[in-house]
Length: 135
Image (cartoon, rainbow, N blue to C red; front, side, top):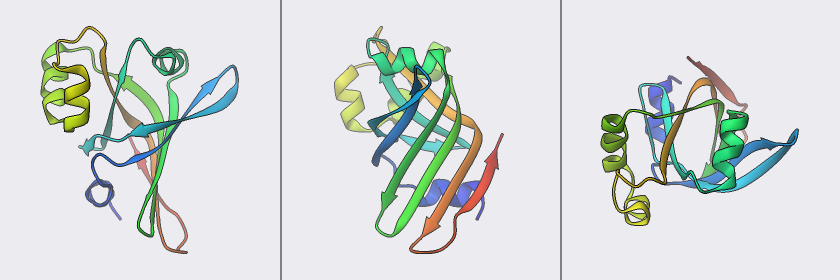
């Protein structure tokens, strides 16, 4: 499996668990994956949420989800988008729920981040995990 195969198989807008580190302990949040491209996996949050501060404090995170008999994990370092132009482009590609929640890419609370350094893992049914490094 290649990184592009992984992106193609992982459903856009799927909900899973996002694990962050809080005071040296794991904390899992219910989270929605947006989309992936070029070995980067995109997510959205609000800078008013505790999870935003937690990711800024320790950017090493993991997103885990299942779809039918497939299991997906993305582990690595979160990178926040700072370019307003890039943020607008990515926001326009986010799902309808996110777009209605923030209403525009100019929202002062909107934060878009991606996991782009780390690894992705995939398993189907009872098969062993396949892991691919992302850089």
